[in-house]
Amino acid sequence: MIRRYLLPRPLHPFSWWGWAIALAVAASSASNPLLLLGIIAVASLVVMARRADSPWAKAFKLYLWLGVFIVILRVGFRIVFGGGDGPTILFNLPEVPLPTWVRGIRLLGSVSLEAVLTGLYDGLRLATIIICVGAANALANPKKLLASLPGALYELGTIMVVAVSALPQLGDSLQRVMRARKLRRSPEARTRRQRLRVVETIIVPVLSDALERSLSLAASMDVRGYGRSGTANPLDRALGLALGLGAMSLIAVWAYRYLANAPDTFVLGFPVLSTALLLLGLAAAGLALWVSGRTVQRTRYRPIRWGLAETLVVASGVAAALLIRLIARYGDATALFPSIHPFTWPELTLPLLGVLAIAALPAFITPPPYAAAPRRQPA
Image (cartoon, helix red, strand yellow):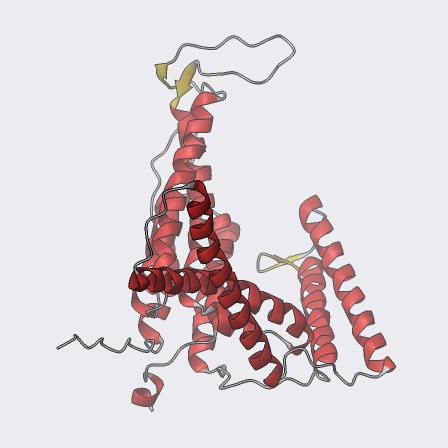
């Protein structure tokens, strides 16, 4: 049983997105730089261990560089605009005088340790959230993700599949046309008319080839059931519309109560009324999608089944986010939000290490992806 469970297979893309969103929620609930760096390390570990050999999987390092850029940019903004908030002055820069009508804004001047740390913590938190999204993009196949959308969203899935496939098709067509031009050994363009002729002989074949491949993709999707009209009756349409409006209303009321910090009864650190509104809204949205999509006639080629591994992946992310919430409510909240005024060194306590260990479980308890077939070297 265990050997069969660990056979290489791709996991459901929704499981990776659920795990990544839960990690992003955990990162947004803390400012401890050690915890945030630990979440980045966990996301990198899972990506390195469970990503497949695909173009989108190799783009994770771009998200890491984007996170570094965000941190540097956030600290730079704190230094340039009002970096003197705090008693511990690190260094002084020549201040740029501004007109009197620009109040509350200061260019350069004194730079304090507290301002730099505030920019560092805020930038690191945003960078961690973006890196979690990048981990989901690296682990989940975007085409499988769109193909796994509910039947009610099949039109959106069709549009997104064609949009995602358009840019790679253009790049492939351009490479094929340039390879053909090299094989024909076209003469070098010297005059302006000849240069325009070269552009024409490149752009027209590229666009025509991409158009033909897009039409082929649309035809294959039509054969598999995309774009077919359903057989919904007026009762199903009315029920789906009512459930959708109810879901939007419940989620809107929950968002208002959450942003307004409305009074509520707490049980185990969770507001009862707000949690009930959120769960009812999500349930109504799920029922609306089910009612609207059950009459859509669509076939799927080798769909990815939801199994035990997918449940464990989502459960590990949700458990990490819930532990962060419980620590903030009943534990040592200073471990999640280290003090800046006055400055105290951040600590990675034992409960936070447990959070990181639980979040890293998908790197070890999930089946590995398919290995890429080795390329044969020419004789």
